[in-house]
Image (cartoon, rainbow, N blue to C red; front, side, top):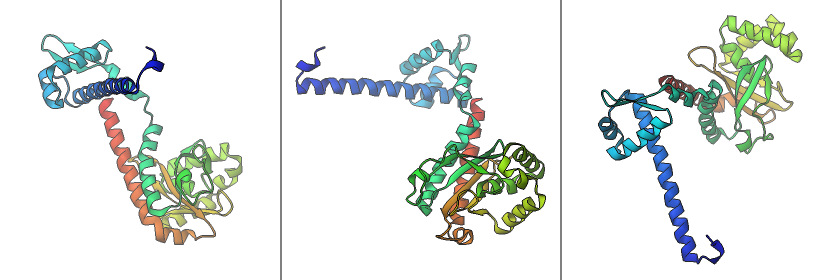
Length: 282
């Protein structure tokens, strides 16, 4: 086709046809996923049942199910004409790690928190003796001097993120975390072994109802943080970062702790829902 010789009307018509084709393709994908979701929820089903539950006509259901069967995601029991999912469907969820799920759970709540308070926040998890920042709203906060925080590490014993995780962890797990920090993080080794220092952290965090740090990670930067429960070991922690010159941790808690608690509850809710959905697929 010679595009240079086409008129404006012809170009418009071609674009319209292409958009229509693309739209049909997207709808086909959406309908195929709807069938997978329905089979996942209801178990082996007939075409009549699937058409009724998904709102698709029988011809469309047959065509999509035949495609899914050829690709190995659906099987047909010809004795009773029931379609069912194959174990290959599980492969669709195997690539979704706990890391992916925790980030997906945290980020919407973090943006909600940013709308409330404007100061940036980080979501961190314990890993190899320190706290790894997995998500952050620093790039979107008008009060942040950083634009890249994801992937950075914070101290387990000096940062608010780390203190929150320590205080919320069971004693046996806490001891294991501290031993790992002592062996892997040279700059924190002495503090991780100092029982009086650790007990002071635990007592202060319990008394305040949140963890805090002033210059613990960077000079001139303060933070308050809350642990995020998960029904088992602590999922991680959520902090709020602010300039030490702008307010004390006590002032920040008075103004923003309620918003942070709502964000933590939302992360808990999303984490629980994501794991339940993953369990159903598995």
